[in-house]
Length: 111
Image (cartoon, rainbow, N blue to C red):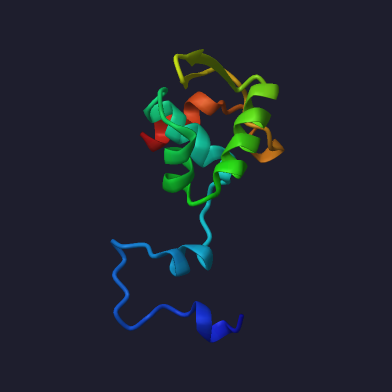
């Protein structure tokens, strides 16, 4: 791909994110943070819906959910054919620059 393929089209509408534009844009939060936010807003959210809202594949969501469970940041339980998620309260953010802050702080700030 060339640089010109990633430029914003002349009819760019900041309220509408197309697939092409979303692949060339960056955000301040990681996909892990986006998944946590999606789960905090709807504990019964489907992984398919998380993938769509975050802009990643279902496989990536599965990997992130697994990593968040392994790190004790979330728990999941099977309810029928679906999962229900629960954020673990008070878990620290992982980077040294974020020392002293928790996932709760992040979620509260962004909600």
